[in-house]
Image (spheres, rainbow, N blue to C red):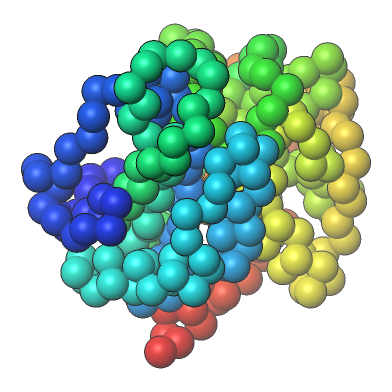
Length: 288
Ligand SMILES: Cc1ncc(COP(=O)(O)O)c(C=O)c1O
């Protein structure tokens, strides 16, 4: 996703070419920071309070103070969006512990976080493209026990995605100790006998904002929803499999490990849910 021209860096709005950070920044040296990606429809960020709450949780997990109040964050979002007009966009927000004079893992007392934000061009999701579905493989989830933090240290996710790419598919369904956790940058859902099932939140997966929204919309629209561990052995008999995220929305998985998922077509529950999701976005797009 390409970045729009004007970015936010430590209180200033400036052209992306002029936005620079120190090579001593702990984000650069250690991946010591967190991030958020917030979809925007029209002028309205989706589930902004939930994204800010997750931001707060991630910061507190890594002992980094939240540098702004929620009201101040929202003010910056509005200003940055106004400087980068468009329809369907996403705010990328990253906070690192900033530059420290000594390269040492120990957290210094000096507090100088680096706050960076840019607007990504996302473009409206093409439903007929999405409906074609994606192919995935299961891969052992070797990541750490802190996957609930939206950390910028993403090298494990990069390695897992590369493993999927080398297998000739677009993504992986990650499995830890025989149970599904999530995708490399998405949450996991399965449909069995009309029931939508997703694993519970834990230190082994990111509490996705799209995941929560899908659960909520399912419950509001009469789709039975179950939150429980999903064994890898259940996957072969799944009626539908989806991967959800802010930018991918709800992607149907039509092949897994070189075998069709049901009849290798996006299923009826996905069709129902994607319509509900598009309606939800449309309301947001039109809100002033
Ligand atoms: C590892 C991981 N899990 C799940 C998600 C989905 O989260 P969200 O729905 O908030 O985008 C993401 C999004 O980037 C992710 O990186």
